[in-house]
Image (tube, rainbow, N blue to C red):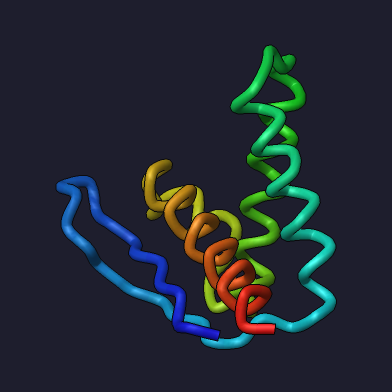
Length: 103
């Protein structure tokens, strides 16, 4: 898998830490595909706020697992911008689709 990076930023928007993962275990695929499907549904229609909240909680849990808990849920909440979170998820999905195209 190509490396995936997540940047932590301070209040000034400057990067304070960067974490990397280069491994994606097979067991994570179901979770990733489930969240990708939910993200697709969110883009296409009206979704209840509770469902959106659950989606983001699950997405953050997935990011923690993919990065093998190099940081905590609280650290993720406090140091990662929303657009960075979505970029990281997009990078993970891109790695999966790239691997599928190879086979």
